[in-house]
Length: 86
Image (cartoon, rainbow, N blue to C red; front, side, top):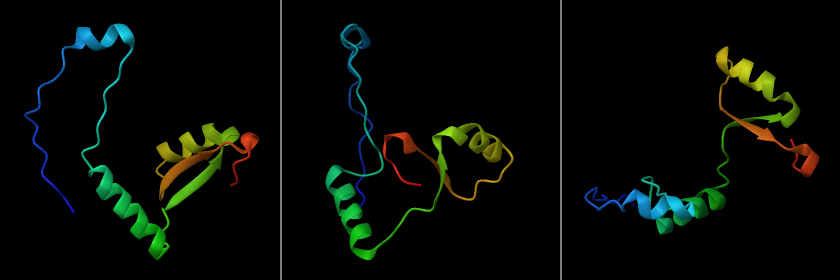
């Protein structure tokens, strides 16, 4: 599934991109087809992420807990005001 990506691609000149607020991004994790395959596998096998959810109004507490080393998993802020569920 992994492929080696060459880092010898030329960079576009920055002045050509900045006037129009253009942003180029890439992922060195995997190709889009590999990502789709991994997500399909996770869905088929019922693999879930290890996360701790915090409501948006507790963001300050989440930051304090993270700095105190209490984070066991990735913190996810949930916007309950827009219909998301904890």
